[in-house]
Image (cartoon, rainbow, N blue to C red; front, side, top):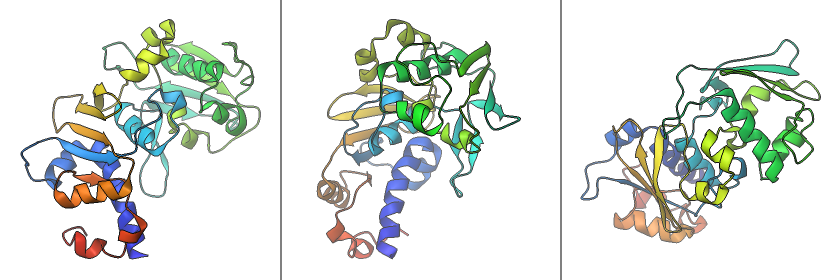
Length: 269
C-alpha cells in the first residue's frame, strides 16, 4: 500500500510542478538544464473540449484557469475564474466571472469565451460533449448547432446555465477541461487544428511550443521555471530516466518497481 501511495505522489507531483512553479523551485536543485522535465504519454489533443487523457488534463490544468478548481483536500470545488456560481434551485445557475481576466494573447476572458467554447464542444461532438448532455444535462444540449436553450449570456461577465433537472454538484463539474474557455479568435475562425498545435489559454503557464516530442510551458508572469513535458509513454523508460538524472518527474511507474521505490529513491518521502 505504501508503494502505491508513493506512485500516486509522483503523479500528483507532476501536476504540482505545472501549477505551482514556486514550490517546484524550492524542491529542485539547480541542474545544468534549469527547466523542470516531466515524463508523460503524449496528449491526444490540447483542445479543451476534446481533452481525454491524463497528460492532456495535466497540461490543461497549467495552461487554463477554469471556472472552478479542486482544493486538493477532498475535492471541494473553489471558485477560480468565477467570482460566484449561484442557484436558487440547483437547476438554473448564474455564473459571474472575476474582473480583468485575460488570455495569453491579451484578449479578454468574457462570458462568451465560456459559452461559445461550450457550444463549440457540442457542435463538434468533442469528447467533453457528454458532460453537457449526459451528466450536467444542459437544456437543449443534444443538437449539433449553436442554439443551446440552456446557455444564455447576460453581460460581459455573467452567463446563465439551465439544466434539465437539479444538480447540486454542478460547480464541481465545472473544473473539468470540457468547461474551459477559448479566445474569440479561434471561436470565430474554427481553426481547431492550428489551435491544437499552439493553444492559447488563460492560466499560469503559456504554451511556448508543442509537437509530438514535447510540450514546453513557460510561466505567464515570467517568474519560476519553464516546464518541459516529454512524450514518454513507456513507464519503464520514465523510471530509468529519473534514476539516471535525465528526468525530474515520472507520471507512471512500472508495477514491478513499486517494491523497490523506497531504495531506488531514498530521498523521496
